[in-house]
Length: 114
Length: 111
Image (cartoon, rainbow over all chains, first blue to last red; front, top):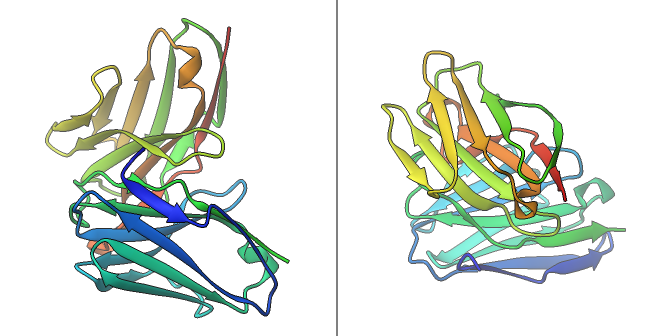
């Protein structure tokens, strides 16, 4: 248990659906992240938020829309996804976004797009 | 640019030692090491910072050679619980927030 929770743990959606992934951290951290982990590929950073403000968008397609209402919650809104978007989506948090900070990962949401 | 890890996979007998390497083509300020078991979240192992500071688990040792832009993770007297995929992460270019990770090293410990 890392103090970062994600729901749902598994999600199957069609290409025309709209769904949201939720992440919550109980560590009092100020920075939160979304990563994508595809089969046989490295962890890929998607978005970074610091104090609710987005500081990084790593060239992510607009069909992924993040939302950070406060420092403890992070959402990833999904719409009109493609089958190649099927992956494990991991949320992480850290005290600040600096390279000296440990990132704590949630268990991930395994997404399958049909 | 993502760091390069080697080897891609290692199979050991319980009690044997292993070294996992992580190298970068750019100067580094920090190297992060994580272990991920199948179906689980990556778990933090260690951070090594430029200048020699380290933060992490007592039973894990690692080195960071700033000049060579590489880090090595040392797993000694391996246990079955060490099995998993090990990732190294480095800071992103230009001081951008977040980490960039290597492709991982798969470690299998056999009894």
